[in-house]
Amino acid sequence: MFVDGSRKFLLFLAVASYPMTLAPRSAVADDTVTIDSGMLKGERSGTVVSFKGIPYAAPPVGNLRWRNPRPMEKWSGTRDARNFGPSCMQTEDLPKSEDCLTLNVWTPVKHPRTPLPVMVWIYGGALVHGNTPQYPGSQLAARKVVFVSMNYRMGRLGYFAHPALAKESPNEPVGNYGYMDQLAALKWVRQNIEAFGGDPKKVTIFGESAGGGSVMAHMVSPLSRGLFRGAILQSPGLPTARAQSMPLSPLKEAENSALDYAASLGINGSDAGALTALRALPAEKLTDGASSQDVLAGMATGKPAIGVSGPMIDGRFLLETPEAAFAAGRQAPVPVIVGANNRDLALGQATTKDDLFALFGNHAAEARSLYDPTGQQTLDELEQQILADKTLVEPSRHLADHIARTGQPTWWYRFSYVAEALRNDPTWKGALHGSEIPYMFDIPNALVKDKVTPADWAMATLASAYWIEFAASGDPNGGSRPKLPRHNQAVDRLIDFTNHGVTVGADPLKPRLDLWQRHWAEEK
Image 1 (tube, rainbow, N blue to C red):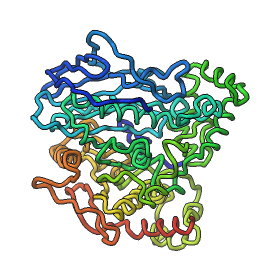
Image 2: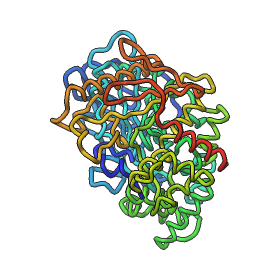
Image 3: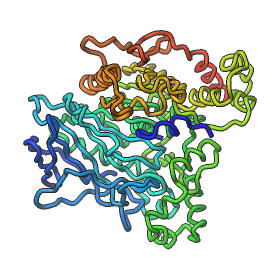
Image 4: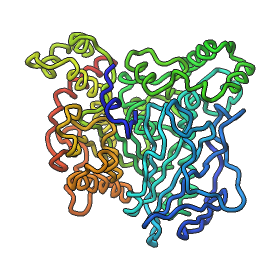
């Protein structure tokens, strides 16, 4: 397995339906706000006030384990919203709980008369780990947006399809509980965000890695339609826009995996008794063997961790692969920004160069001439280049091609900027998986702490400005920033965030990505 980005970049590793009706909201009065479920007291810091640990659904515990999120009961009095809620269950050593369905809001203390655009962040982590404290929204909120982040169930608690679940809830989506949590959070935003000064008609969803893949899933799910007006997908994966590169599980396959997992614990059968036994297991038990390393290794080898199905085509939330939906133009008709990093996640395995080039089938010789023309390239370096192109870089272009063909405003980018303090580090030959996040959040010091430089801050100010303007208007351009052209498949033109600023020009990787494109077309 070769996973350079997730190994080297630890800080930002990225490897429900219930009825609602719109009602008047109270405006933010410093650090107190009233929402559907009660009053909240947040915490003011400078020009921003944050509200953390807000429950957006009932605790998914007991008989609600592996059920779609249920409405949160109202509380009396004022709820303290100054601290994050526990993260959802995972193997990482951090505060966590099965009772984890909370979200966080950062908003400016002083609002203009016009409601502010809303940016809803979905963290990555291979759908088995991740947490919201890792992604503070204060800097974005200080620049006049309302920022929201949410917890969602992951691993076997979030993506699990034991056959007894479909029998128990024949009229509900089953399996993709993590996505249903995200959906419930988006519905919460639509219903409550006015109380924080946000505009429910100006919601942009964005995420990285599995968070970007989640954004993709919401773009093609009929259940998420109308809940957002823009989407930003940063290195979207799990799923990707290439069904062959990172396949989704059919529901039957996910059910068989759940049965095998239950049997490994001595729980047999597909009836209600088996489900009762599974629900009686400690939540900690369900995370065994489901770390990000376990899941990425399983994806690399084609042997997934038992009972960890990841996203599945369940027939309700996901009706088909995202690639099929985009090819047919069945996605949400919203403006899109999509891209990947120039040293992105390289997922796969090979023991020799011949094994690596064999991935291209009949195009192996051409691949060798493109990636290793002199034969001097190391196997490690070839794995990085070839597997990153396969896993995330080419699929991001493929997605941009599909969306742009419909006429939807689409911008395709690559992030190549490396913090000045890291440019002499041989492990940082480019922007690793997830390393764009501190810049899009305008917090480059999160990556290099006191070694951050004016150039790093300048890139963060610039990059985040594009994201903020996109949320505000549906177009990233404005002010004196370099103009980003909309994507056109017929034009060799790449937007690149480089060490020398934002550039627009021919893509140096085009021959490689074109080769992958031809290979995938022949593999269908």
